[in-house]
Image (tube, rainbow, N blue to C red; front, side):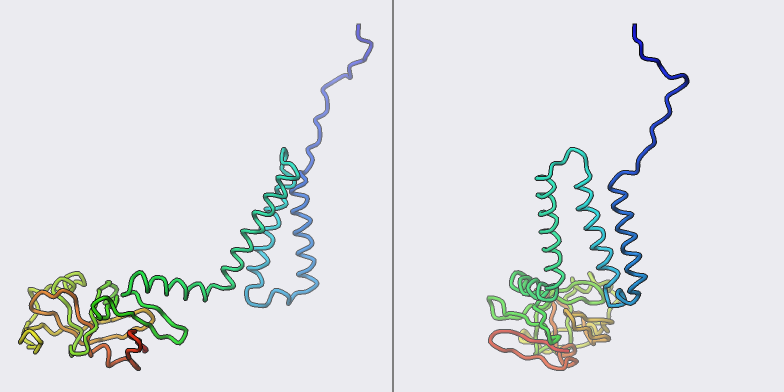
Amino acid sequence: MNDAQEPWGEDPKPRRKLPMFWLFAIAIAGIVALLIWRFPTALDAQGGWANLVYLLAFLILIAGGFFHKGIRARQILQYSMIWIGFAGVVGLGYAYRFELATVKDRVLGELIPGAGVRTAGGEIQFRADASGHYVVEALIDGTSVRFLVDTGASDVVLSPRDAERIGYDITRLDFSRQYRTANGIVKGAPINLPSVRVGPIHIPNVAGSVNGAPLDASLLGMSFLERLTSYRVENGTLILRQ
């Protein structure tokens, strides 16, 4: 027979304790609020609040590992090093974002010659292709068109195929203009291009025409080039500047 006396009534429910993680988060929030109250102008600098939010989120994320049940100290250290390394990579990427953008443009310029390579001075450079021609990817009123640079063409000349892609109905165009080319006289339909964009260069209202016969590639002619501040060729590289 058990001599222990059972208490009368129901056992009182144990009080729920606030988890240590949330105590830590509340303590951090209190410290931050105190510092902001004590130094009200410390976050006025550009990016101050963004940096604070980033650091707090990172600190809480790391601290969460310390209060997670079943995680050993060695695992916590490993996870901490991984997140610290990740944060370091992100920080370096942000610090060198302009240099990385230049590297990206240069790689694209080598892999896709028509994309060009932007320079710090606002210029864009194009390497000659295997045949010695310069190919330029441009946006015509938002539509991507591949051009062959031709200083002998007076206008920006669209092939019928590219004109249809942009939205022109070539059956309604007036092919009344004549152009003298190396292959003889060809007819073209005069048009006005609302916008021609090549990399950082944007030229509005450019005179153009739609060729009356098929072309292997549209031509980027003088109606665009003469609107630039300069265009030149140096060491096999075409350099455009607005």
